[in-house]
Length: 402
Image (cartoon, rainbow, N blue to C red; front, side, top):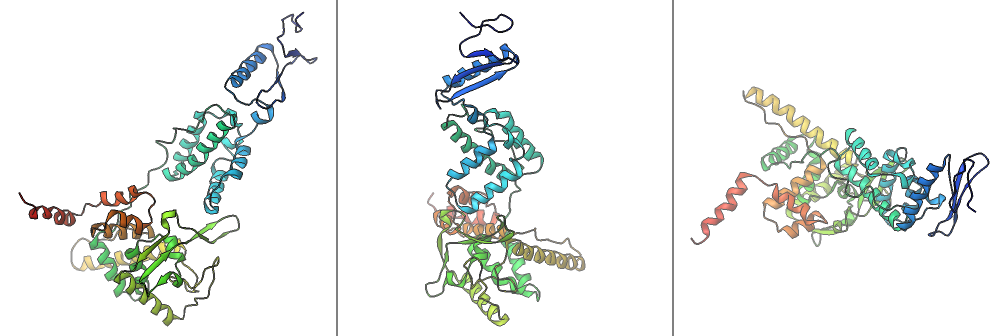
């Protein structure tokens, strides 16, 4: 004879009504082989829970209470334990999670997170001015994490997949200095009593197009004057990994970042000038940072230059140049021709552009730049629009038979 509740309604197998009037459904999770109990204040509510449970069982998902109650934060901790990534990337993931996810959707149950929650997160980050790059990295954490949850039979679909497009503030396109701007900059630096000391470094940045972290970490041990090559196999990252901002030695940004750059005459000249300058100033080359010492480009104490220090140098040079240009233009009764704001990355972009303009082979340029993806290198070629270069290239047609 079927069991009934206190209103005379028949109860199905696994259902019962407790003394306090609440309803309970007891079943065995086929995935975990554990006995699970679900509760509801009324019978219709219990039946809805039963249908959801049956759907999950049909989909091959685990429905045990422990797994179902797992929060996104809890699963993230598990995910990070199995993720094989370098320390720098891992610390970046941790910082992004703590700042943007832990106290928002991180507190939700993993099984309750829907596509709308992911889109709301990305939309909020966009409204707060975060870039496409930042949101892309966050997406790079969430999407594979939900893929793992699918493999673990916790969720039936990935709510993050396919939802990245359209979010984030687009970065302003970085413009390389034109040849004219580059010449004006170097002429000003050479003639400046204040800034001429930075000429070797800036010349080297343009000639090699190295990343600022590679510049910071460059030591004289990486310079082979005999064979005229520069070895790039590490960089210095200036970040807070939980114990304050400091330098950390790291591998190059990508595997392709490990490279040997042949030394041109411009590079050779810049390095010799820098070495002489350090000798005359008595720079302490014994300062050690994360196992590195004997730095090429240094602060006053002999330690490496942080990225913000390099950018401040460039900012101050442009500011001084534009101030002088404004005064000269006034006396010459013309409009001033200012230099744009520049950064270490623009110096790298400028160096890459000069090499592309000189016709350096695309694959060789990719190698020198340390680009893992040749499309990044091709983007430099595609943005070259200098009319003099276009004229030079198209004039080659005059030598073709017609």
